[in-house]
Amino acid sequence: MLPRRPWRAAWQAALYGTEGFFVRNNPADHFRTNVAVPLFTQAVRRLADLVDEALGFPDPFDVVDVGAGRGELLLALHDVPARWRLTGVDVAEADVPFRWVHEIPEVTGLLIANEWLDSVPIDVLQDGRLVHVAPDGSESRGQRVEDPWAARWWPQGGRVEVGLPRDQAWMRAVSRVSRGVAVAIDYGHTLPDRRSTLTGYRDGRQVPAVPDGSCDLTAHVALDACAAATDARLLTQREALSALGISAALPSATDPSYARGLQQASQARELLDPEGLGRFGWLVQAVGVDAAWMPT
Image 1 (cartoon, rainbow, N blue to C red):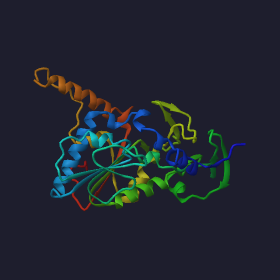
Image 2: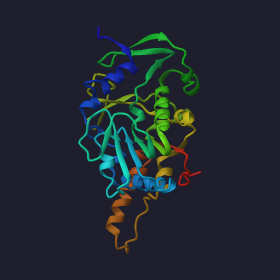
Image 3: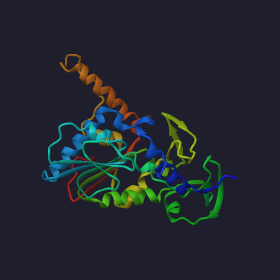
Image 4: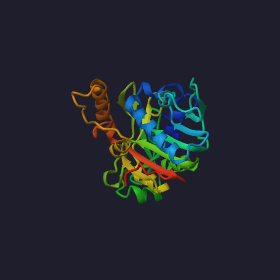
């Protein structure tokens, strides 16, 4: 019989161990996210400009990407002011022209985490018992667990993905912002639509969740629980991007920049599509600064 251990431990080793999936693979090769859409980078640049202005143009001004993959988002931020300090944070190494670290540094500016929390390993309960899993994905039930997080945030029971480690990861990220704004962007759910979503991705396809290091492992984030942990604002991606000037409106045929406007409208539709990337939620936490751009 293959050895079994709780999902959280197996997940941690499968993604972040010495031979873990994220150590050996570039995430962008396996799933498509906001960063693949150029217009998203423009929105991040707009957001960074707003935070920079609200802080009074500090030197340095930090833009920190947590779960940065191979640095794609920051590499796409062209012609930023010299006093902007770009920093990528991830477990793997990357050959990039900016600072690259493995732990979140102190931030005065913007911290952004795009599809990071969904990869924070968590335990799974089935009818109140801890689920153990083997490297081939086969499961068994372990000891009974009385879990306060599950009682509050997943009261219907059944198969429960215990999101406390995501709340704690978000709290730690926010605690690193001395002044500025922290943003986490992820697929998620709230109490009315809470459901089990643990799955895998490999080579752009959804695959069974197998904790052997061969695939990404992900589960939707209990965004309402994370928001409550820091009193963050919870927005839809449509609300957040609209506030940052992203619109899918088609340009006028007489517009001299019609072709470019058409391209941007197409990208906006992808970012705002409620059946695709538009399903993302945004956690937005302001620290010592007025984030007036946020919808009320």
